[in-house]
Length: 257
Image (cartoon, rainbow, N blue to C red; front, side, top):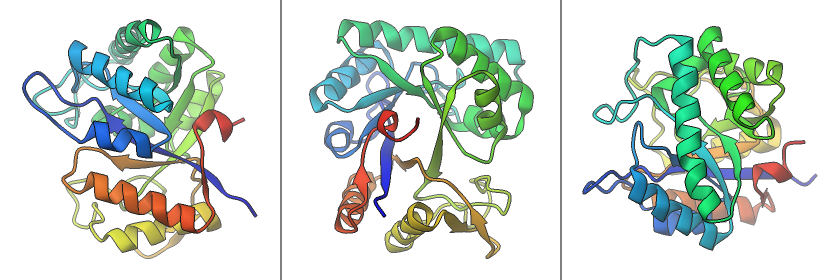
């Protein structure tokens, strides 16, 4: 059996004089880039530069909208209404699309960032606000999110195609949600263990939860965070390991029907 999977990373997260990640080195190794849109990270010059790098590499690009929270890097839960979230998403998609038009490329997908992503996996109203905002903007865009989530259900209800995302470096609860970063064991730092878990998710459609239960999961796309000190080496190891097993890497539009 031939397995195919997308490899994505959150990029364009520098801001002003602050440099985050190793975008220039990581972009040629992945198949889809999630580009920050100026709310949790990124600025106009960073967005322009990231679009240049993505265009040169010939990979797919997605928008990575988050909360307006530069200080907290978009990882703090904000008290917001669904209408506010819908407006935040629309605003950020429009900002990034201005740059993609300039470079003659189209957005492939949308993946919310950080706290917005995590809250919308369980909050139906926020998930609906995101999905409907994306669908109004362009209903041909894919929504990249966990398969076991309110966001996936809302995306389907809004008529969007859903790409189901898994994480190489995060632990899972038994309901398929990510373990909160504040909980011990949430981050997987052993690279060999992380890669073995990825292979299990891709080839067997299961993952072992933090409490030891084997749960079903679907891996259309693997996320590797681009802001860690070992991010580049980790992406290289994942790509090599998958290639050695004849697991094909492809952008989401070639995987999700």
